[in-house]
Amino acid sequence: MKTILWATLTANGNYARNASPEHPPKQEAFSDFLDQVKAAGNFIVGRRTFESFQAGGESPFGDVDIVVISKSVKDIPGIKVVASPQAALAYLQEKGHTTALLSGGADLHNAFLQQGLVDEILFPIAPVLEGKGYNILLNQDHYQYKDIQLLDFKSLGGGVVRLHYAIGRE
Image (cartoon, rainbow, N blue to C red):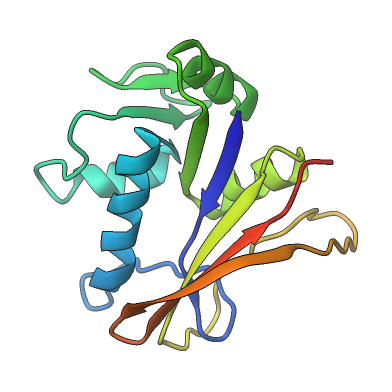
């Protein structure tokens, strides 16, 4: 199964938090996310990010398989909850998906990267600078370096540019 990590970054390279109503996600980036969800038919998300999606009211995702990874929450009505990245991928593969879209939470992204479970990365770059932010990391304990291959780049409008990379599994 191909796993694609989708994460908006700021122009200065931080993982974009968009944590407040004063600084919502750029609409062009969110529209791209919805397009990726529709194409994959699923997405994997962390519990806190999923809860932020729910705070907006009606779901914009339609009829897709949503998998929440959580160690603390065991049940969300209508949503598959699992405890690990491997369990999320196994569930989607059992459902017949050939691509998994990983979409939310720096901790979750880093867990997938550290375990070598990501094949491609989509980085919409938002035209903003952010102070202290989160980082996408291969390994939090020691320095690690990995070359990746640029597959494509695209202007999404509004100053948002999306970079598409192949990372390859370990």
